[in-house]
Image (cartoon, rainbow, N blue to C red):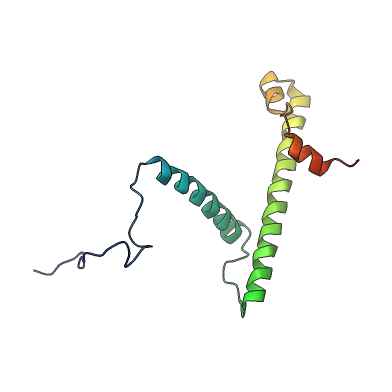
Length: 123
């Protein structure tokens, strides 16, 4: 009988650290790493699928790869900033036309940390 699933082989973590998960799933450390990883994967998927920057890039050396990564980061920052502006503009237009209090709660200001305020305020 032919094995349809291929073969299995016992390997150790020190031999292939990327293939075998050293941190047990479900632990607090695994969840922290997973949250960070999913954020980077979200960034990469937006850059690849929505902006089509790293779909099939032609990169000849490290300098060009660095430039491509910087362009992708700038494009993603602009994409998210303009999406935020459009979202707020649409919400304010909806609020002006309907005076719905549920929309008003979405438009309320949030507290900005002093560290960010010192970066954006001119003295």
